[in-house]
Picture (tube, rainbow, N blue to C red):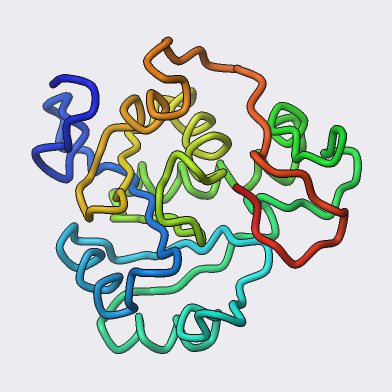
Length: 203
């Protein structure tokens, strides 16, 4: 498969039948109906919310309680993990010059605990998607931080992009690197700087 192509199926492509661990976002355009339709299309049964603050003033339908209720009506479980996998950690030592330093986050015990929980679910055969606010996966910590860490553990990751297609993790990272290659352990940070304790979700 060429870099940038969507995955032909919701599997890791290695012939062992393991489901991809997916990621998804909503941005300003994706409706909650479209969001649920995509989860159902790809057979997701567990949605893991990795927003540090799972609330939205501008998209209240994506706030924690409202989203959980919507998913429940469609037979999808909602799991909150922004406390361990969120992109705006409450540990001030994870910031460098106002940006979230993903190398520092990866070294924290709580982040490892969150990854282990996802890994256990994936190995258990559960169809999981992790969600954050950004529509495009390459603009979000779910690719640069969580996706990179999962792939390094041997987990097959796919990203539901802004068009609703599942692209490979390599394709998502190529969008960031401009085709210069992906190196595990690269010094990725959030794109923007943040005042510690902000309500904004990082990207």
